[in-house]
Amino acid sequence: MHDQQPRRNSVDRSEFYKELDSLNLAPLWEVLKGLVPADPRPVAAPYAWHWTTVRRQLLAAGASISAEEAERRVLVLENPKLKGKSQITDTLYAGLQLILPGEVAPAHRHTQSALRFVLEGAGGYTAVDGERTTMQRGDLILTPFWTWHDHGHDGEGPVIWMDCLDVPLVGFLKTGFREEHAATAQTMSRPEGYSAARYGSGLLPVGQQFGSLTSPVFNYPYSRTREALHRLAQTQEIDPHFGICLRYVNPVNGDWVMPTLGPSMRLLPEGFSTSGYRSTDSAVFVLLEGEASIEIQDQPPITMHANDVFAMPGWSSYRIQALKGDCVLFSFSDRPVHEKLGLFREEKQ
Ligand code: 1HN
Image 1 (cartoon, rainbow, N blue to C red):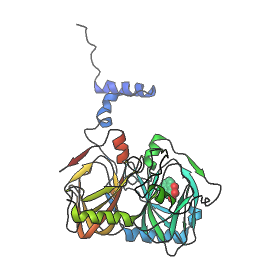
Image 2 (cartoon, protein in one colour):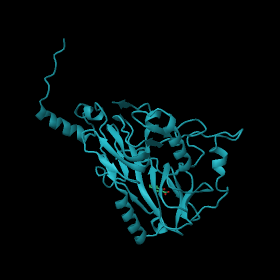
Image 3 (cartoon, protein in one colour):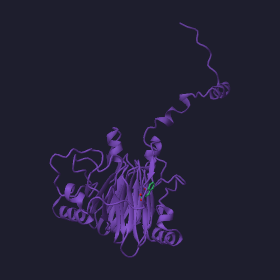
Image 4 (cartoon, rainbow, N blue to C red):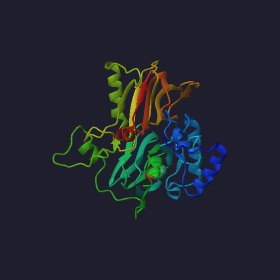
């Protein structure tokens, strides 16, 4: 047997640690449990933004700055535990964007992927890589990474939507690049409806090879989503944890519509209450129809009205109850990333 060196006591250690620090070394044993926790510890708090409040402030922003000057006239939904970071959860960005009649939000592109979920108004449009799509309430519109996109408004009244991006994820990877388009608005190279006809009608062009990371469909209209949910509600057994819940799909390969963002839409019939559920992905919910309450374990329920937004940190156990009317809830999360990396876990009560 070797003679063991006597161990240093903690006072000696603090000198030792200072010396290590000066050499840019650190003792793992002081931080190991924090690095590898027993279960996920999101920093974000569950939080609701109420539409009446946010809408009023957005209209005030409309009186204060033009879409072109702002580039994007957006109020960022900042998680109260992540102030100043432009994060609604630990991994997701969301904000509400306003565009007024005649305005243009200039064309640019970036490596971040974006979804837009339309909340109010008619006559607004987004153009993506040479094709325009008109926005109706409840539509889901994709602007895949590195596609040129600009927004405009030919109609009347305010148009408001929620921007949903993977900004924090891309920031963590330090892979953010952006580019401005030479023109304010890009030139259209295809007529409106082209992508929907070519890729979004249950058909795909014969012989075309697809890159599989993002869906080639870029507008998923609410009229179709709503019809599907209500039809299923009449005949399908309702899942105790999800109600009637459908995810938006890339028709080429059945995958999520984007590599980093997973949107879905659910219907909870009036009076229905989901059983407790949690999953590792963090999510953002928007109530589109009805009145609902969201209850996180051990916290008082929060009542949601139309267009209210809720931040759901990962691994929070929650129930949703449809209080008035059949409730339709949009959500998006970082689940595709969790799945691809083998990190997705869920727990059902
Ligand atoms: C962006 O490009 C838009 O194109 C909106 O409308 C919000 C937030 C962060 C980074 C890029 C848009 C954004 C954004």
